[in-house]
Amino acid sequence: MSLYRDEGVVLRTQKLGEADRIVTILAKRTGKIRAVAKGVRRTTSRFGARLEPFTHVDLQLHTGRTLDMVTQAETIRPYGEALTADYPRYTAGSAMLETADRLTHGEKEPALRQFLLLVGGLRTLAERGHEARLVLDAYFLRSLAVAGYAPALDACAKCRAPAIRAFAIVAGGVVCGACKPAGSAVPAAETIGLMTALLRGDWATADASETRHRSECSGLVAAYLQWHLEHGIRSLRHVERELRERTTTVPASIGSDTAAHPP
Image (cartoon, rainbow, N blue to C red; front, top):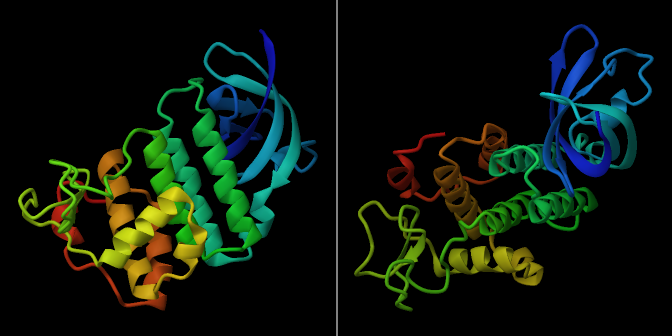
């Protein structure tokens, strides 16, 4: 077996046997890795706590026939410690991990930009400088852009006309009146502006946005993400429940666009 070293973020774990775990990691150079961590469920394990979700770790692994094996793990930064005490940030972080897992399809296919986005998103959440849902929506939009699914926000997704009338998930973003399909959402101009700011990293504009536009933006971004993934993000249910408790503003016309791909 060959030995290699990489750093990565633990996305999820699952039990294996009586004391082992299978750990899924998004690594900086290698991409997504599934590896066995021997004995980590024992209280005497040397590095069990270092292989929990949200942890940024430096790893040494052996290449196996089907699954690699973790032989060393050193914590770079335990983001989980900062997130678990704050429910909105914890649920947002969980949705980030799940999305990173979904967007990196193949194992050991380099995904440096997705890795950097994930680390940056978790760090921003932990630093508490911006509202958790804004950070999550920014992460969703940028991850989609890296994967080739960036929504059109400046001109019609179909004909490139500058006259924007609606947002159509099936069309790939904003559309003009002539190209507007049935069931399109008609968000406020400020909502589209917020999506643009989040995609570009314009935090001054994003932080100054109103609650109703944030809520509308979150609904559109979540629907757009899950449409392209063709799969619901389970963690989003908890994020959206927390959001509903703080606001009752919900984009009314999202449901018709997303009916073909329910969460």
